[in-house]
Image 1 (cartoon, rainbow, N blue to C red):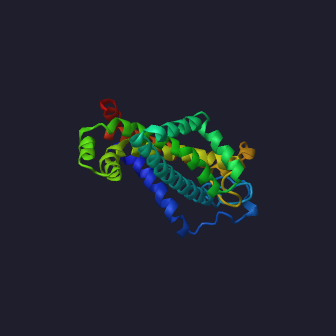
Image 2 (spheres, rainbow, N blue to C red; image 1 turned 120 degrees about the horizontal axis):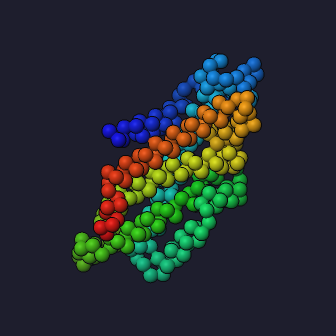
Image 3 (spheres, rainbow, N blue to C red; image 1 turned 120 degrees about the vertical axis):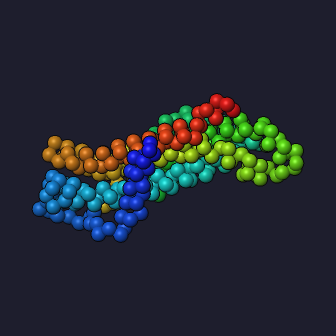
Length: 267
């Protein structure tokens, strides 16, 4: 029962993101007579400062956030798990270099580093994905390395080594399945972090470029009209709030269900 609400909201987010291209939306159509009109006057979420439907742009922005979160978390997890697993299992100079690189990345606030990278690469959704991936892999690598260090002395790992099993098969068939639970939880919280980071970069003008829609850019456009048209900020703000809240709730439920902390204490 505890999974129903967050899963329901996230499934709705995913369905809207996938199906928005099939909806008869008009996010870029300008209605001059409806500029800054409040909700209920021809559109259930009103119109923005250019006379565009806030609801249509909100749905398109949901697709943007979903795609960025999916790509960034997938690439970060893939890169971080490989680096962390190899580092923890092989040890030696490889582990030393990996730890030093991770420490360097952790010395800077992640969002500031992402802003710097996005500024160097230039605005655009592809560059946002690259910038956030360059920051996001560190958490997965650190967690994967810690898990490998705690698991590589297990009896079944030592038995596989004694039998001459190649290292690739040991890491794939013996280590990764035991690491899956904490990594899934890390990925869940990573989605929430990426949604906020993407909105922040778009708010600063480093993400989706006009006339494209993003929750962050919608908030930026609405800040100038907070007193006369608060719906321009409230709609995307509530969307970010509900999405991040449900993702974090799902992460908490998964952590409790998979008993990740209990497993880490035992190891």
